[in-house]
Amino acid sequence: MVASLRLPSLTYLFTSPSATLGRCSKAVFRRGHHPRPPLAAGFSAQSAAAVPPATEERASKQKSRGEDRAVTPRSLDFNAWYLDVIEHAELADYGPVRGTMVIRPYGYAIWEAIQDFLNVKFKETGHSNMYFPQLIPYSFIEKEASHVEGFSPELAVVTIGGGKELEEKLVVRPTSETIVNHMFTQWIHSHRDLPLMINQWANVTRWEMRTKPFIRTLEFLWQEGHTAHATPEEAEKEALQMIDVYTKFAYEQAAIPVIAGRKSKVERFAGADRTYTIEAMMGDRKALQAGTSHNLGQNFSRAFGTQFTDEIGNRQHVWQTSWAISTRFVGGIIMTHGDDTGLMLPPRLAPIQVIVIPIYKKADEKSGVLSAASSVKEALQSAGVKVKLDDSDQRTPGWKFNFWEMKGVPLRIEIGPRDVSSGSVVVSRRDIPGKEGKVFGISMEPAVLEAYVKDKLDEIQSSLLQRAKLFRDRNIVDVSSYDELKQAISQGKWARGPWSASDQEELRVKEETGATIRCFPFDQPEDIKTCLMTGNPASEVAVFAKSY
Image (cartoon, rainbow, N blue to C red; front, side, top):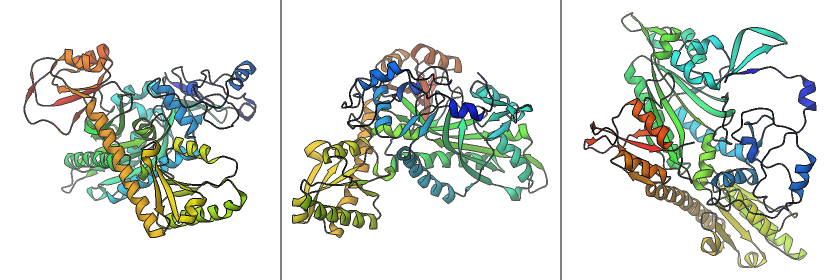
């Protein structure tokens, strides 16, 4: 569908009734906040539309449900668990339009950590940040045939501006290849202007019919890189370089063991010659396309006339790439590492790596405990650790333990009167629950504590990656026939097998099993095999899975 956007009046904006959500939450985190509509139905499978007003009857039912229940177990209902974690870890909330979300400070801090790392990598590889307008002339979208065909169902279109019908419809940015090419055409004239390599951090709008917070929403945040080159070899090298940047980020920062590879013709980006991807296995064994890099060839440069004069004076169309990673990666982190207690963050992306909890019962214990806790915080902060001291009086230590575990903080330091007397602290790991993850008697002496904390953060980072790799590898099945593929998919696993069949056969697999080719992995076996569908020779294996 193409949505026509009309600018609302201020009266509507400030008098529109509060939005509600049609599904009751399975859980309310153990704290005394006022009951409110749960997050889940704000991202339901219904069409994107204004959310209906709340009713007193529903509010009354929510109040009677009580406030002391845990998160829905992952094994019971993975989707409900995911939505509960987002709500109780205070990552996001629903927007007033169904399918939109408000990213809360803690959720945005995770996105900022992703930005901080990638920004450095983009600049190291020669790219500069800039910004393009959000509104794009509709005629731009129509210039590249496969692009308009691929994006038309998701476009949001502005037809009214300033109270008047616009002469030309405007598209709210779904991606920027078209407007980038329009500007590249004005900036690129000679081979001396190449390569041109830019990136922008922006929001995009795609009118999704089935939405899920962070994973698929009407509006989301991302970075999109765009480059122009003089030769196809340079463009291919760039596309592969950037998927490698994403792969290393996933492994080294997010502790997510993605499979990098090439998309099939059916699954590649609309307007690309080749699309490269990183595919991640979530906790429910569905695949998440976590990042993509496209070799656009000359498809957009020919459509827009983006040319340069080469070294011998001939006019040539530029060769281009585009590549992107988005806030869906936040959802990927939640679904890869989280457990029944809540969020579990890899230390390198955690907004808070260490939470310090002071524990005291008597008034005369308070000042000594708080002083020691403050000293510990300052020492770790000086050492470059992202640390927070929770010295609030409104909550008990037990409540604080639960709350910060829900938010996925990798390490907790507990300090009580006995610890102050002995000059030591208690350290608990988020990734190892209970007594097994708790160590007593760690010295408060700054040099000792700093070294211990940094060592444990590195251990947690490695442990999360190893755990995710074991889970992934246990759930990938090598298959040699279509029957074996169907059996693996029916068991909720990924299927990996030789493939050289047609696009029509690929679509048949999708229709009959719900699975798609996630990629042809870069890591391929050397021997030539037989296609699992046709029996013909196949030089590549493909990975099939159901996906988000």
